[in-house]
Length: 637
Ligand code: ATP
Ligand code: MG
Image (cartoon, rainbow, N blue to C red; front, top):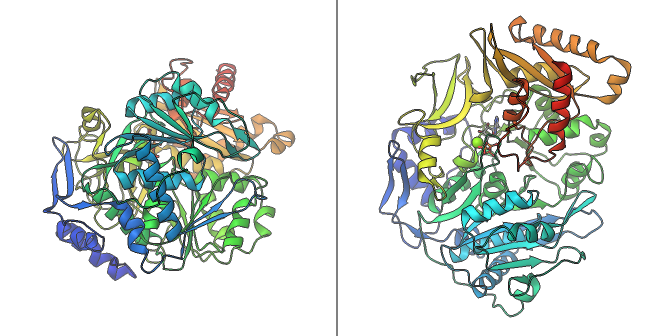
């Protein structure tokens, strides 16, 4: 079994070893997996002309580690417990034995459709078991999966399929999501009219909605599965063979096809899953992310299955049929470990406590958050009302590119601190650099977060464009992986993510993180959510522009001008006069990507008085928000 960290001393020992003898450290972790052939060299790397290889020469198949090896001792244990969008529909439970069989069948189906090792398969599917199954089925036969979140538009889907040059697309006729049904196949038909690489499109019948099928290209999933055998020998893969391509969420620009490979990704996701969440054999674990994001890849599919865990998979949304949905599922399935995003926490917080108080939530042991900096209020609410004050919160900082969690508390082992991701995990060597690339030593410093040594699950390239990978991540600071995030190391040596570097403003020579100002604004009880950006200011260098969503009920009793005044006072009180926003615009919504992140570059443009040329906005959830913000901004100025 994997060596586990149980207390602060274990952490200190593991961390020290991982820095002093990284290759030895990771070789020991890797030893607990099934390899068809052991590696010849643990690590080979070059950060200048970027190349990283882990467990070089090693041969394996990740699905043997996720499935086959559990059949001896966990065959009848639940691997995936699926909860449908509609609470009246029945759950589906797959044991390790059943999951193994389904993966083998689907792998054979893909082969019968012409998929070979190295081919790309795109998946545009609802959060149903078949999604997890087909991810693993691809891995079983050495096809490279590229999951595209089933909320993307036809053009966003088409550009990703094209970039990956995928041969096969897996989809469903429709995807139930909350009270809506998303017509997936219709979107697919539109997307496929824009690309030429797809030979087969395999369509799962998720609902009874009729769809248009194209002869010779489209195949019903259930038909394709009719004659396949349930045995499928796993393909032997090289440790460095690509496992998947995943396009980043696109908050900062054109999405990048991040490539992860097999051996290192396996070792790191398993290690971090078990340690960060302090997973124990019979825990029920639930990550609410969508498999279309890296969180779903690493911590719904691979990490938990590598550990032989029971992983809950949820098709729906947090507020359907009501804002108690998450908590009802937690109670019903006795979930022990719960992992979600700040955006979900804030949405549920805004709905009021009555939806929480109906539930016991006494099975919960560990809570997690990921995706963006969590503001203090949301952290406290999560801690107090969901964790009842006794569940440690792991605020996990990481990225699509990092493959796994990088900086995070280890649940119950490292003391937490609201809004802090705390300390690096073993194997991770974060550094803070100033604008000139000097490492900032000591405590109480702030700079650009970089990593100075490879870890097993780091991205290997961006698909089809290695130069882009080099220039995005390895050229800003020579010899370092640059994360793009700003970060503070406080007096305790704890790390706090300040947001993207682009979001760190320089106001009259003072560096201010947008997250910090947003925290202060959000403390006003009429404020639901806010976003702060900098804009060019003739005297200060940068001025602060804030976009604020207010509770409509509060707006009825207080005027906008009064609320704005109070918000300003709040910021002055919490941070200081220097952080007082120049502009406060009350908005009905923020331009969010489909993964729930704010597209700040749009807000920055609007704040600077530029009302067009917003770049790629295909990942926006609701483009009409942009129009209404533009109108509002015109009125303000
Ligand atoms: P793109 O790179 O295409 O702009 P993205 O950065 O939003 O998209 P992800 O890889 O999903 O895509 O997100 C990683 C980013 O999310 C991090 O760089 C960081 O800014 C933010 N983030 C993730 N987890 C945390 C966390 N716990 N605390 C603070 N920020 C976080
Ligand atoms: Mg990013």
